[in-house]
Amino acid sequence: MPTVVTHALAGATLVALASRKPVSTPDMLPWLALCGAAAMLPDLDVVTFKLGIPYASPWGHRGFSHSLAAAAVCAGLLAWLCRPLWLRVGLSAASAASLLFLSVASHAALDMICDASFGPALFMPWSDHRYLSGWKPIEGAPIGLKRWFGPKGERVVQTEFVYVWLPCMALWAGRWLSLRRAGEARA
Ligand SMILES: [Zn+2]
Image (cartoon, helix red, strand yellow):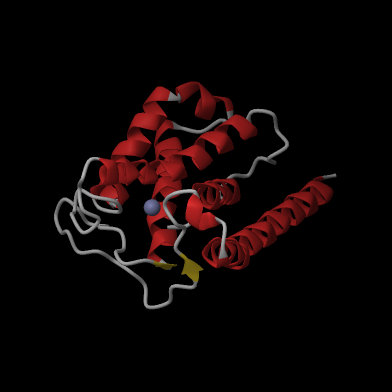
């Protein structure tokens, strides 16, 4: 799996791109922070390792928790619980829930291009098939702190930087430029 910080960045970037308001608007930051946090949620399932549920199980790591159905439930709950955050940025309930869904679902999309044994069970509970892309450039992040200090940890940081952080930074820069141009055109 990519690290949770990388998942948060990807989720928040997608939501920011879908918004017309500049990120510098004070109310946008808490909303984007919520969307970033939402993108991290599926990996709370690492607790299943402690519970003795095997990785290969549909209820284990990257199983149901990484499905589109779980993303929809998560998005609905978060939209309901955090209503003031999306109201302040002028979103409707449907738009807020859709953007939260996009953010949570981006987690599974990134996991699919990550070099790991099992991909996300996208269509649980209807199918327990695990989906992994044929192109998996991102090194799987180790679980446990020890293995971070070595070549494996370095590869994780390098591949996440190249395949997620750089594209996200380019998208943020593009968005900033387009908002600036739109502002200049109105002036
Ligand atoms: Zn994951």
